[in-house]
Image 1 (cartoon, rainbow, N blue to C red):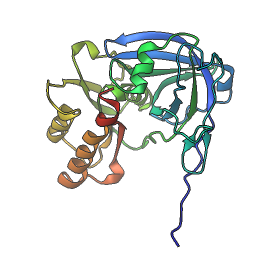
Image 2: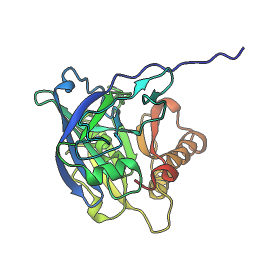
Image 3: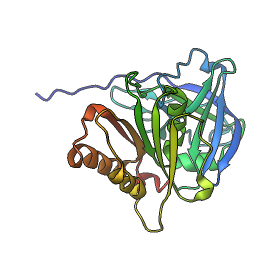
Amino acid sequence: MTEIRTRREPPPFRTVEVVRVEPRSPHMARITLAGPEFEGFDPGLPAASVRLFLPGCLHGSLPGGSTGVVLPTWRGNEFLLEDGSRPIIRTLTPLRFEPGRLELDVEVVTHGHGPLSAWADAAEPGDRVAVSGTGRGYEIDPAARAFLLAGDESALPAISALLEALQPDAEVQVLVEVRGAAARLELPAHPGATVQWHQSRAGSRPGDSIVAALTEARLDPDLRLWAAGEAASMQRIRRHLFEDRGLPRSCAVVRGYWKHDRDGGS
């Protein structure tokens, strides 16, 4: 008999509202979510993730004129809606949580073709969504003194959170792939950080410039590496780090944040 394993149930969803939308670049928007259901919310470790449930509506109303949000429920291995269909849920890394104001800031890549990007393009104060989290974050090695952070625009909120959390005497190299100079964001100041912006080329695959930069990067044995971005590019980075360069897996965390074939570049 085949054993069916069930996944651990994630934290329940909290219904919240959009209270502010701030363009950060031509390709990024900061969206502030707030509400009393954020009471007791634990932001977790740096670069932790949350699930964002996007109801099939925008601007504060559901089909039929309802102003509520019908939340998905956990059915053993996944979240499902009442009719058994799969909800639109995307995972992202919050920028910061303000417990006194019960506000969560998220930054979302815009002007893509996926549902998360479409939501961010159209989001307005009063829109309702639901948040579940937090998920796994990055546990900083207190003994490490050299870090390399790499990613595309989707990783910028996590990179910002890590720069704020890393010890001030650490040496930090940051590699970021962007679609153009206007997509460069002001990152938190860190006394030991150097930042390199790599512009993607027309016709290239997502992550090509980061993969190329990592092939030239010096990887000392005591280095700790964190990378995130488009899923296929992260697979290439894993192969390069662990197979080609022989980096111990315990020294690196590499996470796929989005899929080019699913999210259409969003």
